[in-house]
Image: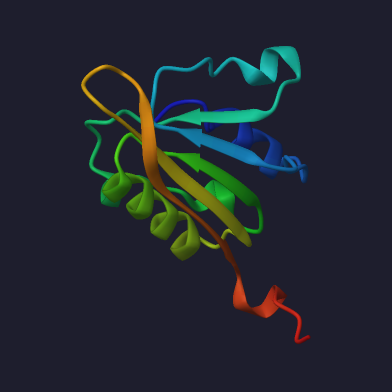
Length: 116
């Protein structure tokens, strides 16, 4: 996992990003240099359960996974780490490269859900 180090530095300074994007595909992680959205890259070969997602405590997270199973596992890891909102998804592709329905879900920390 790469790109989370600037988030750790921000958190130590008492600052937190409005949203953290966690992508499981090749993406730019030099976001802090340009003042862009906080972006973390997870390799599709990394063991998700061994990664430390504590940097998302109290934050909103957007996850784009390489497979439905991995997207769900990253989402669960962020929920367990203490994120307050987790939006996760995965678009499946067929052999020709066309997108077909995948999976998506938005989770809110229960204490934040207000009764209607």
